[in-house]
Image: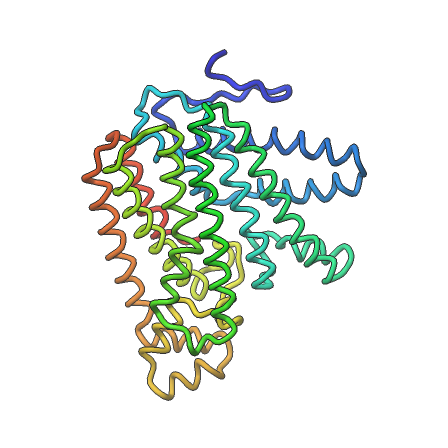
Length: 356
């Protein structure tokens, strides 16, 4: 049963190469479900209320999502490991990325006071419904913290040589630092959005989103392969930054014009909070004095119309296309497994032309 993982009373098959996207995600989610079951049982044994707390955290982790971070990490690994390599040892490391992502989402939703995520109430809203707003905020912080601890624990279970895990951990730590740094800049920008700039908004996009969504997961995968491939590392870096920034620019557009039934998040949150995204900074830069006045004082729906009237969304679409083209050029010429190259090309489109 070398290619199976015994998980409780279930046997979860680890798909042989070539692997389907669904097969990969199912394997990662199976690993997460079994790990979280053991963690919940341990907390349940301390106090039933802790078990309920942990179950809420589990539900947030397993609530769906695009699972882009483990996907990019897998194909970063596969690009150098090749089609014959066994993917089963990667699963704890890939699952750890999703736990880290949940930590970031829970804290981000709390800072933005977002009502929904993936079509469901956010963590702080769930807990606020139990014991009020202050409890909701406090419990959401703790859920995020717990997910980050769980990510560390699951990563440590990756069955690889210590030297390999040390390199993997270095990428993981860099990813976390950049995500926190980007989030701080994001929060800072909201304190005085008029003093922000398009350039600084892109800096936030690079650190808050691009680095931990695409760039570092790819490099994380390269480290999992224990490969010393400078040319591949550089191609992954360029692809990761450009596709990651394009991903965030698409997110900026969806934050204003996305369909909540598809995105799972309310439309207009960025306009409501005054978040200085690249889209809104461009709109302010391109606006007439009359339009600028409306951007400062109109209602959410009218602000969205004004942003469109400035031409900023069209400019953002151009920026997305430019970045995708640069990223595809980098990965097309990289000395990696052909199937991995094809999937990374496809993922660039999936990540940047998505409806949610």
